[in-house]
Every structure is written in C-alpha cells, then in structure tokens.
Image 1 (cartoon, rainbow, N blue to C red):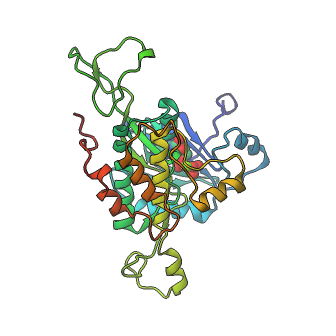
Image 2 (image 1 turned 60 degrees about the horizontal axis):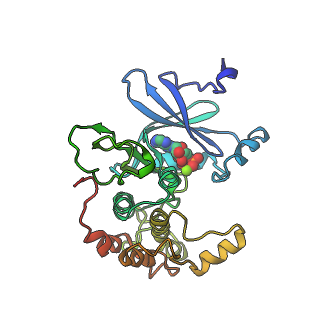
Image 3 (image 1 turned 120 degrees about the horizontal axis):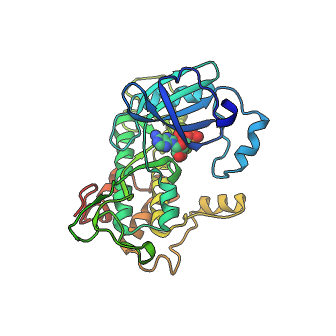
Length: 331
Ligand code: ADP
Ligand code: MG
C-alpha cells in the first residue's frame, strides 16, 4: 500500500488522516491532514532527520525554487523553540511537535490558500489595494517579531507567506465586487454576484527555519537576559532586523508589478545588482503605479541598513498610514 500511494509511513502520526501533499522542500514535506479526534484540519511539516540521500536528488531539481538547505537536528529544534514563543494573527502557529526515529513532525495551523507566490503567478500582479491588504498583515507579523519578540525571520519571501482564501458567498444582491477582490476579468465567464471567492483573506508568515533571536539594540540583551557577549557580536546583530525590511520591500515590489526587483540568470551578476541596490521601476509596468508606493519601496530597498526603513517607519509612511482601507474591512 505504501508503494501505491507513494506515501511513506509516518510512525506517531496515527491520530491524523493525511489528505494531500501541500509543499515540499529539500528536507521537509508538508501535508494537509485531519485530526481524527477533533476533525480539525491541520498542516503537518514532516522533516527527515537523516541527511538527504542520492535517491532524493532528482526530486530536488524538479522544483528549482526550493534550494537544498542543510537542516541539522539543531536547526529544526531551534525553529520549534522559536515558533513555540509566538502567538500572533499574522504568524502561522505551531499546534504541536513530536518525533519518531526518522522524522520530526510540526503540526501547524492550516493555511488553505497556500503560498502568496502562486497567487502572484495566478493574478500576474496585484492592485495597490490588494498589495496593501497583504503587506500590512505581513508587516504586522514582522512588527510583532521585531518589537515584541526580538526575532528576525530572515527568509521572508512569497513562498513563505501563506493565506486563507475568502470563501465565496453567492448572493442575489448584485452589488459590485467587494474589496480586496479584484474586478471580475472579462475572460472569467459569467459574473455571479456575491462576496469573496478565492481572493486573499488573512495572510500569515510561515517557515521559521532560518529565524534567529537577536540582540536588543537598546538594552543590548538577548531576550532580556544579560550575557557575556563580545561587542562585535552585538555590533554584527545591530542591523539584523533590517534584513526582513529589505525582503518586505522585495515582496511589495513583486506584488505590484509581477516580477522581482532583482533578477539575473547569472548568480554573480545578481549578487552584484543586489549589493549595489541596482533596481528600477521599469516602464511600462510601473507607469500606472502610484508615486507613493514607489517612495515606500525606495525606502525599503536602501543598501545601507542604517538608512533603510525600520518596521515603525514603514507604518508611518503615507502609502500605509493614509490609505482609505484598513485590512480585513471590506468596503
Ligand atoms: P521549507 O523549510 O522546506 O521551506 P516551509 O515551512 O516553508 O518549509 O514549508 C514548505 C511549503 O509547504 C510552503 O512553502 C507551503 O507551500 C507549504 N506549507 C507550509 N506550512 C503550511 C501551512 N501551515 N499551511 C499550508 N501550507 C503550508
Ligand atoms: Mg519555506
């Protein structure tokens, strides 16, 4: 039976009925599952304990956006240790953690919509209102991590931002489509009046596999504990939160135009562009997009981490602050 389903047996997961695979990386497989006791739907991230063997390599190349990442025992335990401390509407919560001889199991809050990445591919690009609806929720998660928990995520990207779709509610009331949904496109067939329908509802930050607890800039303490840390370590970590702000700028840029700010087939050339902060608001794609959104992006994609916007400056920017819609409040 194992052969036919191509599904390994996971000892210790008997409580769950595994439904389908939702994502896979170098060392992890993520499944949609149902808790047989409570009927609650969950996502289970299964992480192999052992090194990747050669039989897995072809599987890696199939999906080039998942780079093999060396996950050691300590890494996954760190991911779990950090996730256990987090509780916020914009952070995917860890429901439980267990292990068997060969695997670690992270039972996670299920995000039915999957990756923001796929939604960008599907819609090509987002309206400014939809992009704002998404980025504010992500930024609220980052503000919680940076300001309340001293955690830097370090891997913010559209593959690690997951969403809940807005359920479609048919209605006889032929009112116009509701924010944050897009206007129905002409080629999408008959327009059925109603609210919602597959658009992005709540969005949350996932994958704390590269996250780190950092030194507090003011108190110079890690999470409130006084240590014997050398000054160069504290200095090194002073701007570590700014890596998430750079990534936030990249995500916002990508949502608004449909392609990332930095791209090159050649890795050395790409590295060079990023190092120099060489990007542009390319015509014609960026022509109809607001000056204010470009100003915000320009303040996030600043090479000098000291000059780059912090999370609090992000929330003070007019494109965020003076916007007519608040997230999750359809008009
Ligand atoms: P990796 O470290 O391998 O990147 P992630 O935690 O990012 O592991 O999970 C890999 C993929 O699995 C995600 O990009 C996403 O597609 C899917 N996934 C992860 N967690 C969830 C979840 N809670 N709900 C739905 N899908 C998820
Ligand atoms: Mg990931």
